[in-house]
Amino acid sequence: MVLNPQAEELNSVIQHSSEVVYNLLSRKGKAIYYPKKGILAQTADAKEKRINATIGAAVEDDGSPMRLKSVEKAISLNPLDVFPYAPSFGRDDLRAKWKELIAKKNPGLQGKTLSLPVVTHALTHALSMAAYLFIDEGDEIILPDLFWGNYTLLLANGYGAKLVTHNTFNENGFDVGAFREKVNEGEIGKKIIILNFPNNPTGYTPTVSEAQEIVSAIQEAAQRGNSMVVFIDDAYFGLVYESGIEQESLFSSLADVHENVLAVKIDGATKEDYVWGFRVGFMTFGIKRGSPDMYAALESKAAGAVRGSISNASNLSQSLLFSAYQSDSYESEKREKYELLKSRYEAAKKELAEHSEYAEYFTALPFNSGYFMCVRLQKGLDAEKVRQVLLQKYDTGVISLGTIIRVAFSAVAKGSISELYENMYLACKDISSNLKKAI
Image 1 (cartoon, helix red, strand yellow):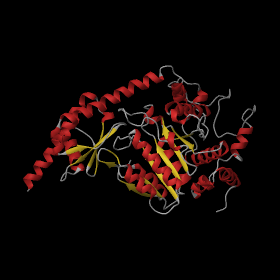
Image 2 (cartoon, rainbow, N blue to C red):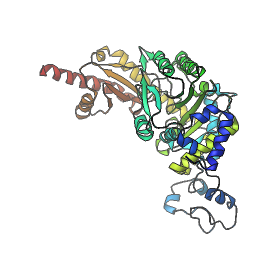
Image 3 (tube, rainbow, N blue to C red):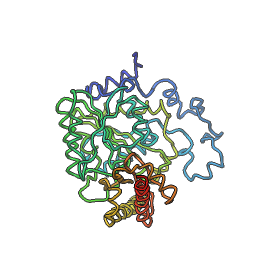
Image 4 (cartoon, one colour):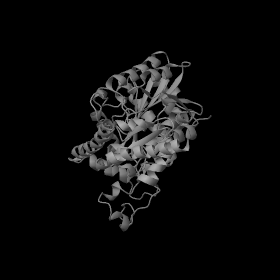
């Protein structure tokens, strides 16, 4: 493949700083670049000129963004923060603010060098862009056997990756042994890992000791000579409801755990700030002894991938979020919503603990955080059949996953939590009774 000189320039910067990171790049990752020449460069040259006929947007006669009054009247922000394109890297002010917020939420990052976050069209797009940069067809991706179903569309269907799973739970906690074995098995070479905590679908975050063991397993694999890229899907970051559970993102430890480990933090405002429809996510890089030049080159490649897919994320959404982050009430508002979700979590825990009869038909998998929890059905029960009975007879909706039912307690009022589980119990009882009659 003949590469564009701008891609070769970025590759040279990355390779000079870290041969490992250069080799982790996919073929597409090596070929991508953010075009600083051509139309974008010529547009930048003309930015402050009195007559500017470069940008592919329309302006009013006074030079302000052209807009419809019917749209403008619904938005109180400055038109300049709403209607023009945002940069493919994302708004500079928001990128700097999000990096500041990451450091505030994760004190373990103090003193560590990171890239500036690149803005994406929420986390799904960030995962796709990470795959663009680091996954070639046929690459294996290590993840737990209980994982977000969209990984299949994104990574297997989208990029031809092979999803290789390990056991998620060992009794009442994360199966660190299975993870360690999977990460260290096979030949020495490139390893790709996804860590998603709080986990979707299970709502589980590792304990502090489990988190340390996960990091230790990755470090061990790196010390053996493996080159590793770890995608850290932090979609539900911050929603931990129990003591003794890891409060920080594993990015805090993995961002400088070893020169052979590139950590890619994939996060965003979607769930952290309850703005699902805004579609604003971020991708941040960290590696031990990562240089500013290398990070800048990775940011350029990420921005090039963004430009080549969606051009840029919504300017309006980015501006609204930046405005919220400047608000004096932002922290107290977040705390209020956290407490509401925690109360629903506690109601679910209480309901399951007080009704031992539920165990006749289902048992809860470990959960301590996030939006979700799962129950595993007893033998003979099919989750899809239970779901259908819940819909048709009990006016209740859940997600069926084979022998597992996923419950989004985040979406259920605290006063309805008890009824939700009782309905699940009754639906299982109905099906079990019918099975016995059939026999």
